[in-house]
Image (cartoon, rainbow over all chains, first blue to last red; front, side, top):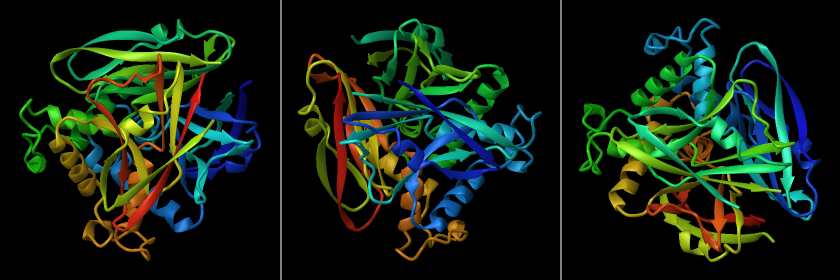
Length: 135
Length: 135
Length: 135
């Protein structure tokens, strides 16, 4: 059975939902997470030090600057604002699906791994992540 | 049962095959797509505005220029032409496998999501994508 | 049943473990590989020409230089050394999970595809990859 998690976002950044995914794990198998959007991403990263997450944010902001940055003047899909096309590019670079083993009802994450939705748009959004488990 | 989709390509760019994948979905579970090559990628992105796809193409062309570009003079694997090693790099950056939930016989894609093969080589190729579904 | 592969690493680079994964494949289904760390990655790439792997290494070293490089002076999470935060960034850019079809007991890899652990840290590590197969 597929479950759909709704995740509200209010601007670019990482929104952790490890606990909500873990609550759906059962028995043994593989949990698949899939995000139904082309301007945000799934993301597994360190959940210990907030500096890691702000540095990650900054790296991706510099790798894919807003479309009003002179270095991005070649972009043509800009009518939804300067964060529109960079959001699609970041969504292309980062995962749309994740597969995580489930062992005895628990996600087999490492000690420092958290599951995040990485929002790339400035405006608030309600994002959907489809969660299924194969036996 | 695994099915193998053959996708013909004629130069760099995005080749949509959403309909061919969707036709293989059945019941409930997870469809896994896997590309059997190291110089092209799988890709999920917006299927509405063609400008999104040409901008994505251009971003990746600039992130990983051909090996005869001065900025790439450190590359050594160049004997198959200037698009050879950049193709391997793009194949490393972008997905080789995708996992997409299937609900009641339909891929649980978002409204704007299409499934693409992203060809990174200049010469025509016949690419193979293995499609399986787990219950 | 999940199996955990232990992979010892001694500095940045690609460590192939195709044979160890292949030995766990059986019947028909999908093998899922999942790395339980936030500073190394899974990776599928050409296993024929070693120049491809050294060029890939160099591309990622230039895309994400050490944090004592002037271009990375914005990074704040640096107390574990100059390779610490770049390792997290590379782990964010490259796969944490891979799904590979299994057909008649064999991984459906292409002729040139090998499975690698991509170590991003300088110090030796023992890395864990969880391997499961769904029917």
